[in-house]
Every structure is written in C-alpha cells, then in structure tokens.
Length: 455
Image 1 (cartoon, rainbow, N blue to C red):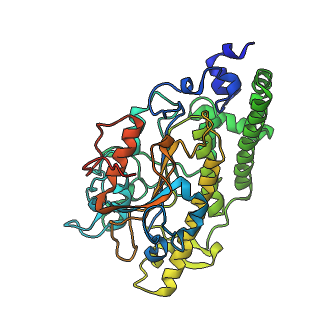
Image 2: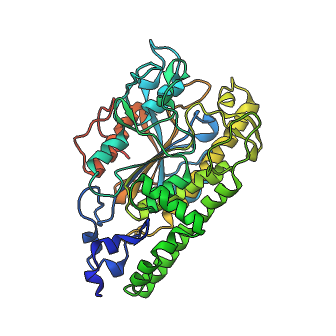
Image 3: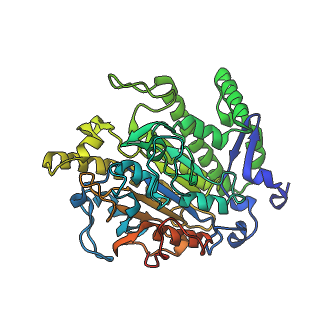
C-alpha cells in the first residue's frame, strides 16, 4: 500500500484487542510538507502543534537561594536554580508575578488552599468546607475547551497525590481547593490522576473505562504487554516506513514498553509505607522521584503523539508535609517552610527546592531530546510554566512568585534571560499571552489586566 493512501486511523494508531497505541508523526506517513501536517488551532508558524503545561510545586521556596542575580541575558542563576544552567537558552526566569487573590483578607487564614485554587484561575476562592465551592475557570480548561476537537484528550491532569474532593483541609477551606489546580468551571474541579497505571491505560488502552479495565486484566492473566496486542499492526506499518522512520518507531515502542515495565515493577513491589501512614494505592511507586518521572515520561508521550496539547501537573498538593529522607532532609516540607528565619530549616528547604528542580531538568531534557514534526524539539514548540502559588513559605506571600517559563512557543518567546516584569503583575497576564499564542486573543483569566508582552 502506498504511504500516501494509508487510512487516517493507521497514521495515528496501532490497534489491537483492547489497545490503541498512538504513534508520533513520521515523514513516511506524512507525505505533505511539515507546514501542512497540522491543521486547525494551536499551531506554530512551522505547522507543528503548540503545547502548554502547568507544573505546580507546593509551599514556596528558599527565596534567597532560588532567586537569580541580575536581569536580562547576563544573569547568574541562584544556588538552587543553578541546576538549570544547561537549559539557559530554553527558558526564562520571571520575577514580579503575583496571585493577589490568594492573599489573606477578610476571610482570614487559608493561604495554602487559596494558593492552589487561585494559581491557574486568578480568582479568590469562596471560603467553605461544604459543597458550595466556588473559584473560577482555570486557564488550562479555557484552552482545553478551545481545542476540544483537535486532539484525543482536550487536556490531561496529573498529580503525585491522591484526590480529595470534600472535607475541610485548610482553615475552613474545602479540600477541593487544595488538591486541584484545574477547574472546568467555577464550581467544578478537574481531578488529577496520580496512578501511573491508570494514566498509561488511558493513553494506550482502547474503549471506555470498563473495557480498559478488562483489557488490563486479560494482559495480566496472560502476562503480556500492551504492545503484544498491536504487533500485527506494527509489522504492517513497518513495511510502509522508510529506514529512518522504522528506527523511530522501534525507539518509540521501546520507550512505551520501558514505561510499562516500570509501572509493573511498582505494582509488584509496592511502596514501603511510612510508620503510621496509610499505604498508597497499588501501582504508586514507592520512590517519589520515580513517581514524578514516570508521570513526566507519559506527559512527553502525550505531547509527542499529539494526544493532547494541554497538561496540568500537581507534583504535590499545597501544604504538603511530605518528608524527603532520600535526600537527607528530616521533617515535613510544610513544617520546614515555616522556618522563622532558622538557617537549618532554610538549608533543608533549599535541598527540597533542588530536588524539585532536578525533576524539572529531567523533564526539560526529555522534551528537548524529542524531535517534533518540523525538526525542532518538543520543548521549542511548547509553553511550560513551573511555579508555586507562594513565594516564601514562612511569609505566605503571593507576590514575587518563583516562576520559570520554559519552551519557545514555536519561536514566539524570548528565552535565555531573567525577566523582571515589575511589581505585583497579575500572573494571569502571562496566561493571557499563552492563550493568545494558542489563538485566543480575546480571552480573560481571573484578575488579568493585559497581555504580558515582554515574555
């Protein structure tokens, strides 16, 4: 069969019983020019998909060790952020952004709940522990609604924490605020998925939730990989590919299988529960770093196969008191963030900051190493926001937030610098700029005032 006449579903998927493995674009299967490959919305000038991701870390940072010295292109990374030096040309450190609707006011305490609820909405959360939650639609869901017909999944929501949808978590605020950063409407959070197995099945399984469950049960009983069910389709496709694309397909399927094996290992071994702490669900890796990276790896595959162009990732819920014994930090993160000027605690916070930044460098490396359909990297054709809704955990301030913007937006962002945008500039202005690049120039997000043009 001539490659130009391969049916559309054969271009996008390898199919088998209970499996639908999306594949990345390949020249052999895409005879048109790169500029013609992707039609519709959220496309770069070169014709590649434009993607956005929002990555959230809790409890603020050790500001003094995090903040770079100087501004512009000649800046020097801070002690914590020095890990990012190899990616200097792929990102911007942005100073001066704020989410002031998370600040304390007449409704009193609850900064952690307000931080996560406001981070992508720019709206002050209604203080309630009941069912009458209310905040605002988040930027990712605005983009997802706009792009809902462009990809298999309008958006993908990830986390390394379990979901809590009700109850009181922070000074009378519902847990729904603290465990979600994505909001489909002002009253409807989009719960993130923390189980790598369920994310994998969503990306590579076929049919509805029950069908995917039955397919997984069959594979486990027969001790087979999801790839075993698409071998016939893969062999047929290999015959239509050029040598370079054959190598790309093999490399891609090897990557899928590696992720599947790591998930299987987590399911067999299981996490070692902390004393007095309930064991996490089956399939959650016992090592936090492995959990984070598994989710990052699937995020990359989702972008690479154009399964979605919008992702949120809550690495840990706001106010998280997770311990970091693996890096020699005793005590909980939240407790340490209330450092009261203690140098010992500040040093521990800096170690936690560096741990999280190590995970960011892992993700950036993966994104930079994946070639997109236009010959650029996935990172080049993406807009990635990394940050927290709190600056200094001891002050609970919501201005001068620690924010990194990675990716070039397909050439529209000016990277390689420390950008000072001024004082208390709404972070939602950055989101307006990102939506404008997606093709939504008339959008409004929470307390936004204007498009942030300097990025």
